[in-house]
Image 1 (cartoon, helix red, strand yellow):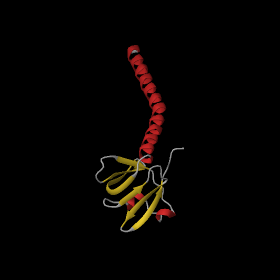
Image 2 (cartoon, rainbow, N blue to C red):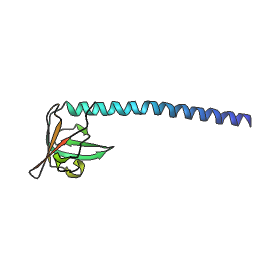
Image 3 (cartoon, rainbow, N blue to C red):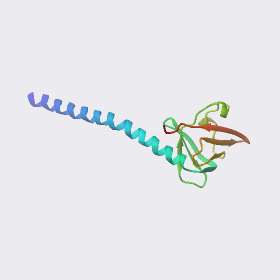
Image 4 (tube, one colour):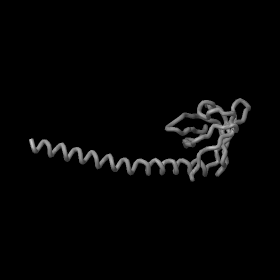
Amino acid sequence: MIQKKRKIIISTGIVLIILIILLYVGPKYENNRFKNNFIDFDTTDIIGELEYVALASHSVVFRIKGNSKMFIFYPRTSQLNKNRIFDHLAEKGDIVIKGKFADTLKLIKNGNEYLYTFDQLK
């Protein structure tokens, strides 16, 4: 009986330690991931036809035709883009243009231009 209680206490302690570590490390990992994704997106000249676009974990992921690199960004819906949500509007075949270190991405769809600003590092 005492042996069983001891095992339960030790098991509970191990689970609590693991949870505390995850709660501490999780946010740091998430911040690093956002930072690395943004730096990659920000430091690249992007121009080309969309081959793939999807919503993933509150961000938009896209790939340009002929380029295997996936870009991740957090577009803002506003008057600049006629309040059109990027991942609802953008499709394979549309054109995306963003200069290196630019603060705006241009989406060209059926001859119409939509401008998207995006969340940046602070």
